[in-house]
Each structure stands twice: as C-alpha cells, then as structure tokens.
Length: 302
Image (cartoon, rainbow, N blue to C red; front, side, top):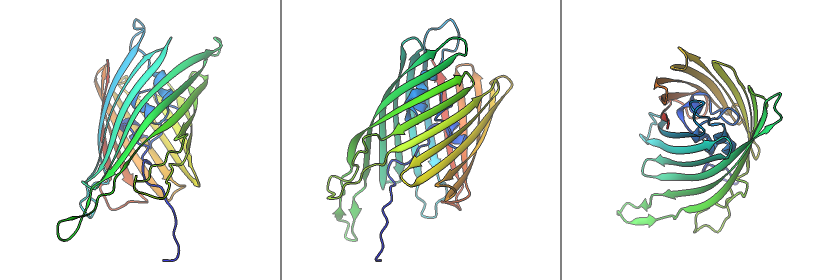
C-alpha cells in the first residue's frame, strides 16, 4: 500500500486492419493502404493505381474486431475502423480515418485522423525514393457514470478531447527494401479528465520498421519505443494463385516478452478491386484463458 507505480493505458492500441493484425501489427515500413495512416502517415503515399492507365488511386477500408473473446466477466471489447485515402503519385496523398474502441458500456476511445503524404524520387538509376507524411489526430475518451446501490449516480467522470501530432518517413534505398520511422504524439497531449488536478501526458512513441518486399511475399519487423518499454513485432505474408489468396503470420513481444502473442490470418480477393481479410491473435502471455482476438476487414480499391 505504500508503493505506487504510474502506468499508461489510454490510446495504446496500435492495431489497425486485419492485414496488419495478422502480421503481428507490423506495418510501419510495409504499409501501403489507407488504414496505415494510423501507424505511419507516410504510408498512404505508397498507395498506387490498379492499372498504369490511371493517374490516381483511391481506397476505402472498413474493419470490425472482437478483442479477448471469452473474458470471465463477460465484458465485450469491440473495435471499428473506417479509412479512406486518395493518392496521386505526382502530387501526393490525402487520408482520413476514424477508429473507435468500446469496452462494454464502461469505457470508449475515439480517433479521428487526417493526414497528408508525398513521395520524392532520389535519382533514377537505383530507383531510390523517400516518402514523408504528417497527421493530426483528435483523441477522445469517455466513461460511463458510476451507479450506487440506491440507483443514483455516485460519480460521472468527464472525459477529454485532445489534438495530437504524428509524422513519418519511409525510405527505399532499393525498390524492395523499405526502412521507416514514425513519431507519434509529438506534442504529448494531456489526456487526463477535465476534473483532474494532475496532468497525464501521452508519451512520445517512436516506431522503427524495415521490410523486404518480394514478388509473392512480404516480410516486416517493427520496434516500438515508448518511455521505458520496447515492443517487437514481426510478420510475413505470402500470396498464392496470383494474388487471390494470401496467408499471413506473425508474433508480437510486448515490452520484451511481458506479453507474447502469436497471430495468423489471410485474405481472399474475389475481384481485383475487392479484398476480404481476417486476422486472429492467440495470447501466450498477458491476457490469457480467452478465445483470442478476431478482426475482419473489407478493402475496396475505387
């Protein structure tokens, strides 16, 4: 009772769509989709047109998830995400994203992002390229009121809404090897309740990523630094039957194995412009004795 340790929990969920989820959350360097805006704002510049005849690309993505299914207290933890990105390689890219985390009727978080990105060629012989991006996030959280035994409200703690800034970079020394850096919460916003007399600042989060992109497979690894914590994420995907079927796998070490998770998943593409993704996380450490976490995404290239 005489010792206290401060810990951060709000807005610490870095998972996005089912593709990244199935690859252990690895997406800082290899992200090339609209929902990658939440991990690295520079990634939306990698969105490319489906055919050479088009000068621009547009993508719409929707994701729904159930986290830690089968908790002993029957709490339902859900996530929903919608993202859109427009990319014109000669001019840049614009992305919009909304994400909501809901813990039963007890707690909720909302993210609203708008980001821009632009790619620049560095020479022509080796096809080196660098992508730079930035995003503004509106972060909001709220809790349900505490009800006493007599049915009256004991406390109704007001939440908080704050703006946060992210920047990112992806450098390709060669076309198949992306190296990335993403800095999140640059302004370390105070997210404590409006009633709180104590300041609670979101810590700066630094993400380093590297990937290898082959013709039919992609490998990636991310390192996430947040105050004294270090997370390691590794993932791989392989395509079969052209790009109609993709299988994915990965693992995530939270704070260097305090929490260990294995991830699996895949995708099916019924049409060239439509992809359906699924991701599954099996907990080995941390929150255990559940049926894992499940995530579904629909990605549509307009």
